[in-house]
Amino acid sequence: MAWFLLAAAILSEVAATLSLKGSETVPALYLVVAVGYVAAFVFLARVLAQGMALGVAYGIWGASGVALTATLSTFIFGEAFTPTMGVGLVLVIAGVVLVETGSPHASEATSEKDR
Image (cartoon, rainbow, N blue to C red; front, side, top):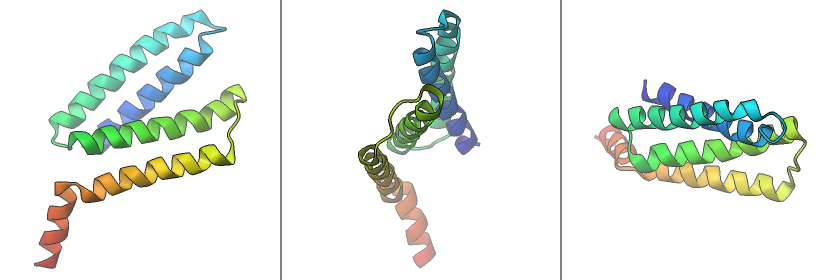
């Protein structure tokens, strides 16, 4: 359930951020911005309440949000997506994977497998 809530937090934040850009030409999108950001934080709070570590949840939320926003803004708004940006996103995602695999929860799971 925590992973579903985290996905909802990510998608809410990305929708809000993309709507913020779109609100330049369609002011009514400010409603989507407000609702999206509030929903993102509510979902993220519920993820944390379910026991996911803050560093892991926030890292995945942040990295996924950056990657999705950069990718979707290329298609929706025609913004540039350079190879350097792609490398940067890969590095951010790799960093989040390292945080996840290095978290105590992941270490405990590995230790239990070794027993």
